Structure formats: structure tokens, C-alpha cells
Figure 1 (cartoon, rainbow, N blue to C red):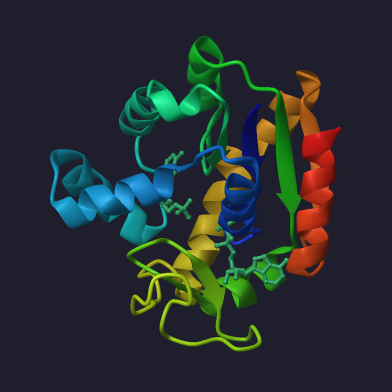
Figure 2 (figure 1 turned 45 degrees about the vertical axis):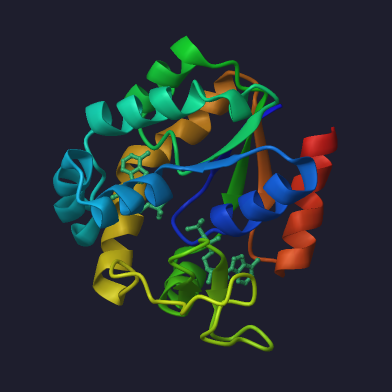
Length: 207
Ligand code: ADP
Ligand code: AMP
């Protein structure tokens, strides 16, 4: 099963992709995680991507499409995968259509003001990419999964969050229509608690 998680930054794509990945034993492919790793490793791609990411802009299509094309060739994608944060432009979606057969697209829908609150309190483990929120019960700055020290992402500050929301509205939201026309879109209300959103996402998966 090949699935795309669509939705604004902070909608819960990563949170639910991680859970689905575990339960269905298919990889979560996050272009954001791949780019952050490239920055850490100091690669050419990382050097190109950093200024865009820090400013809340999209990394150029050519760079991101090449990353996705390469990742989707890996053996672990043969049983299926969840694309988290890719595609983010119509050009990326068209490139993906040439190399993949997408079964359906889950659009996690959440209002902007909820997102600003969610992303301001988001913390992530830089070692295993587990996602947390400071308001969650039992939140600890030590990753419950791997013991790493969780961090706040550089782009999770209010100004950059608002820029990312505006970029989403202009460049990514047109994909909702793109996949609706293709008959692949399933919309899930992302404002509910994680357990309820997860149940709705799973229903979409099992349909
Ligand atoms: P995305 O991958 O779409 O950018 P994340 O999965 O990283 O979003 O979630 C953003 C923040 O919101 C994280 O701190 C996460 O713990 C929190 N979060 C995700 N889903 C929910 C939800 N349904 N209710 C409350 N907080 C949530
Ligand atoms: P994310 O981890 O999905 O929130 O992505 C973080 C940042 O990485 C984005 O704000 C972009 O700068 C960049 N990025 C991730 N995925 C893409 C993509 N598909 N197209 C362009 N830029 C991307």
C-alpha cells in the first residue's frame, strides 16, 4: 500500500506516519527528516537545503524530487510506504506520478491557530525522530523511545511557522484538488486528539 500524508505543517503527519509505519511494517518516508540528516552530515544537498528550511521556504523541486526518486527505489519500499511531507508542489506530484502508483492520499485537516500552538510546543528526538509536545501528559526532555535529548526545531518559532503556513496555502494546498480529481483523497479531521485521529487514519487505511 502506497500512501501520501498531506496537510499543513503541524497537522500530525509525522506523528501518525510513525504509528502507521510501526503497525503496518512499512517505511515512513519524510523528506524533511532526510533533508535534516543531509544538513547534519554536511552534504551538498544539505548545504543547498539549509537556508530554505531555516526560512520556512520549500527546498527547490529538483533537489527534493531527486531525493524521493532515490529513496523509493530502496528494497524496503516494495511492500508499500507512507510519504510524509512529499509531494508539496504540483510539479512534485507530477514527478511522483511517473515513478509510483499511489493508492490513496490522507489529508489531515487542521486550522492555522491550532497549528501555531502545536508547532510552538513540538519537540523532536534528533536521534530517532520521535515527535512529542510539551503539553502531552508525562512529557520529558529525554526521548522515551531511545533516551536521546529531545530538541526544538529551528523552524518551529512563530514567525517561521506563519511563513510555512503561507507557503503551504500557496504551493501545497492545490494538491488537495489534484488528488480529489484523481479520486484518491480522504480527508481526516486532525483537530481531534491523537488517538481519535489515528483511529480515523486507520479506517482510511483499511477501507
Ligand atoms: P507534521 O508532521 O504534520 O508537521 P507532527 O506530527 O510533527 O506534524 O505534529 C506537530 C505537533 O503537534 C507535535 O508536537 C505533535 O506531538 C502534536 N500533535 C500531533 N497530532 C496532534 C493531535 N491530534 N492533537 C494534539 N497534538 C498533536
Ligand atoms: P517537515 O519536516 O516536513 O516539516 O519539512 C521541513 C522543511 O523541509 C520544509 O519547511 C521545507 O523547507 C523542507 N521540505 C521538506 N519536504 C519538502 C518538499 N517535499 N518540498 C520542498 N521542501 C521540503
